[in-house]
Image (cartoon, rainbow, N blue to C red):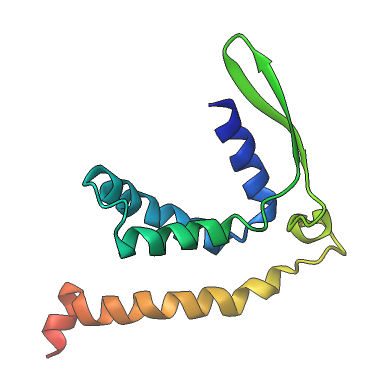
Length: 127
């Protein structure tokens, strides 16, 4: 719907990415609780409080273009936006340096190396 598209556009500049992922991961469980009639259950109330908390930072304005059944976001702004053009650009002199990613990549690759070392067919031959 139009309101859903506008709200998601606003969330994209006002919510932390990991909070958004966590909230989205709770939605199937939340829907199942409601479908099964657990509206007054403590677990549904807990998930509801988490979702409500995630929405406290969502505040701003979204401009939409409606044309022939389509809804397109053409602008969004918020007083407390997490989006900063200087941080997201890869241009020279910007906030990001390519070598900033080296440690991050090595750290995240560590779990994959351990998994491969433990579970790959070649690891059985070493034992």
